[in-house]
Image (cartoon, rainbow, N blue to C red):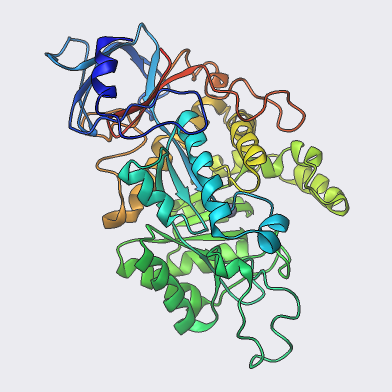
Length: 473
Ligand SMILES: [Zn+2]
């Protein structure tokens, strides 16, 4: 073992639980020098060669061609490998970590909590240093990671997603509510577990939002349209009235933060824009004009592109009767990624991580590759690798900063620049040329021999806020 590593290990307070990795947890503000690295800064389509990047505490202190004075610093010999920002997943559900059909009748919060510990470790070892959790009780997970009790990315939790009756977050059984408004006061397991909160009318919406803020939500998630996985709401529906939507936005703004909405259609998106919703989750079925409006309003779109992949037809969880519809949608919306870029709207990476660990990790790994196909080419000849790298880093980092005073990061995220948060990964290869180095070259979603547990060997160092959690150099 190198001497410098030993020094950090002495202060180790965390251990790896599931993966064979090297976890190092430094307690004090130490210096780490990445020597002779090529830098992808998160914003430009180029590498800056042969630089030395000095990290002090949780921040990047200097970036220079000269060798800084670093007596006592831990030195990482970069040998021309690529140093880039830690990856960011803009939309995950860390606590919804099994199939609904198992969770709802058979599990309690501890089942979810145990699996979530394994899930977050995988995220970090795969290079993800921040994730935005868009529904589910991820508060404890965020706290314990922050304390160093367990190992995972920095989490931006939303808490229970706020949904109207018969909305995308209403998972009660058909007759739980009876037929009269006065009959229905019961809540289903879905709400007991903290996945969703059904709230109707301005007072209930305000209360549901404020409960999430009370738990420490860094942003709020509402259900503003129908979906595929829910029970009573066809995908074309618009959910929450203007008054209810605006109430949620106002309550979030009072806490200095914003609302993200599960949404698909022009009608719903335009209502959200009117109220000041900032992030539009999924949002596949909008026109270029509507995407441009989101861009103009400073908003973001977060489409999980595996939802428009032929791999969806291979997914064993996909109901057979939905296959014709899926096929039609894949064809109709095959250019939607490029349409979003044409419209000038900012797109963040999202895996919409949900379900069993194996399925969810596979989908996330595949998503990186698949986005290069959906966001590359077209009439403007987009560079798919660069677009996706920005979505994984600087654009997602900008979006996370909208949490304002609730933002847990000490500096900018998703960039390599002086003063930014020292969330960094060292990659063996140039991801601008070969995105596969972030991804074990996974180009197939289902049917690939690569199980989710295979370490990504080309990501050799993962640092979060100045602390190295993975080092396979
Ligand atoms: Zn989601």
